[in-house]
Figure 1 (cartoon, rainbow, N blue to C red):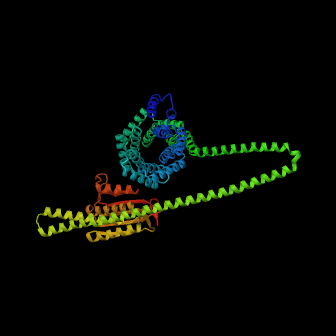
Figure 2 (tube, rainbow, N blue to C red):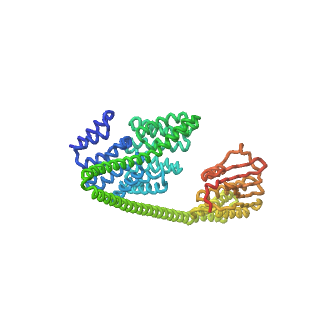
Figure 3 (cartoon, helix red, strand yellow):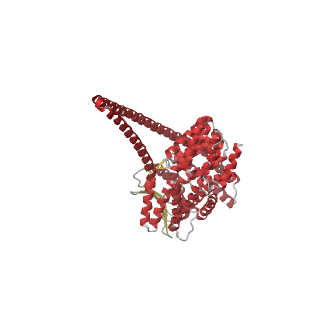
Length: 609
């Protein structure tokens, strides 16, 4: 009967929410329920209500935490810790958020609740992506694995969404879109009216990065419409930010200012400090771009003040507490002095001596106790820091070892399976030519093409295995590999004089992606010179300047008019590979004047050995 009363009351309250605060209505409805039911009903306060009323929600959940402890119900206690972590995230108190998330996950693991442990790991990972993206991905993947083991689609919904954010922050936009769509599908299946506009907003942001403004606008408009209909305060503010970003990305700064100012007002009113910081920073840039220097400076100052506000608020609180303590001690001291004055004439000398001893003893006790506490806290802090450092280092080494073993396994599989199959194809084609000895020129040419293509594929496979077997590739490794390639080309193309020039003075480290793409670009360029240029001389040069490494492939062939020839897959592939490694790709060519292909890499994208 009490549960029925609660449901009815909530229904009435939500229909008249303009008149009554939602959280206050909940508290009024549950006050006659059992202690356990009070905690459970507090925990189902909707997400958007919590983030729109963070300070009141903090008080409610702290009270629920005390009730859960009285009940000695560990699962309920952990559930409340998670809700408090959410509140402190929006209040900007990230230390408290991390602390409560860790307390929750420890309880869930102890009681064997994989679903809630996975959900909490997901939230924990997401909370630290601005500070340590690798550790954030580690925790989120750990949570995702647990949730997929128990097929908890309700918790996988936000976890996929948040993991998409991590991928987008890491520059993996296509991967982010993949996870956003996985989340959106679950949200639609679950009719998650709160989560759907979040996923739509994330998709809008991802397509904005890809400069697909049409899709970005479609997703954003759909998200905004849902949030306005629900009167979702935080969601509306987030959409206003996204509209500002949308126009900012297209350099429509006047339009961006309109949306960002509207968002700034909501963020300040609702104390979304992090959002207000972001918006004020972008308003400063927009005003600078439109020539309004005074407003640009004004919002830059606001951004800096907001950045410091949390620190100032905590500092002021501590000062206020010390002032109260000081005033209390002062009043107590005045009372003692009054009592001393009453008996001063009678016990003047004795009182003075006793007072001095008491004050000295108290001071010594305070000093010794304070010093002891300080030393203990300092040692404890140092131990915690060292323990965390060792845990992080162990996790990093374990992950590196796992990745290395996986690379070795993949390279072995490629070599043993695909390599042997390609070799079998070549052997079969050669046997067919020998056994049948056909005079059909068309068939012979087709068999020759298959054999040639397969041999090329084996060469590329070997290059891939070479890269996979190395965690990092030095430029010296790359130079040796290219030199072998030139030597092979000399044997295969005797009519062309190949020259290799290496002026590299320093050695640098490349990651696997940089090494493979550099190698592929040089291969493609030399192959083009051999196939299409009719060159008699081909030169590969590696040069070093103060800031860059330059790789050039130069031939004296027939050349071509860059403006008239369409860039086929070969030229486009080379340019795409250069973009992936943040290198500059340039082609210089004209009829009868040969072709020069230049790949320029900045040293600051490489690691010196």
